[in-house]
Image (tube, rainbow, N blue to C red):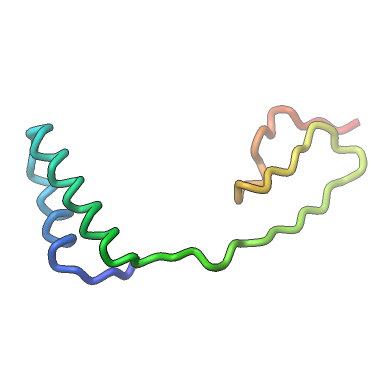
Amino acid sequence: MGLRNQISDRLWDDLDTILDFGERKRRVLEFSHAIASELPVIPLVYPMEVSAIPANLKGYVLNPSSLFETNEIENWEFE
């Protein structure tokens, strides 16, 4: 994601070697706080998508909260 933070890098690398669940949980929380404290990502732009749907395609539902046009493809059918 392009964030440069020595603390979060160290914590992320440590997760490869720590097997104890409690210690991993503590490190993940510490990692989350390190990331959140710098707010590296603030979504200011939301992607827009245009879909062209054939008139004979039934069962297609446009999902505005997903980037995948193939959601529920099992319900699609041509008439």
